[in-house]
Length: 130
View 1: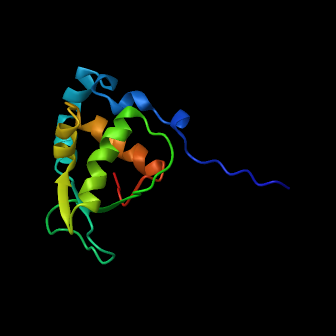
View 2: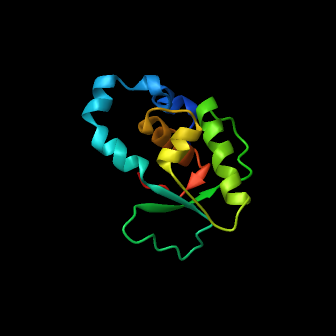
């Protein structure tokens, strides 16, 4: 019997949700509190294997595959290009999802979160738990 292995690929992702236009104004208004919470999540780079979090803050120790060989959507590529230097260019770095969204010129925090989720599902980053 042949074993079939299915890996995630761009065709399986809802790429339209990686952009501000993927969310209606009504949806965003109804979920504003959740979006504010999402924007405060801290991403830690080079936190080490024993990273136990930051007291009183939702934080995740993120690692980025510096040699990811496959194609990314334009939004994912932009996020990757922002995340990789945080890991490779510093001993220890922090950012929030809100600051990351701002750096990607996104109004919608959920679009930034979706880009991060997709990067994780593709194996580009590890450690995110949204």
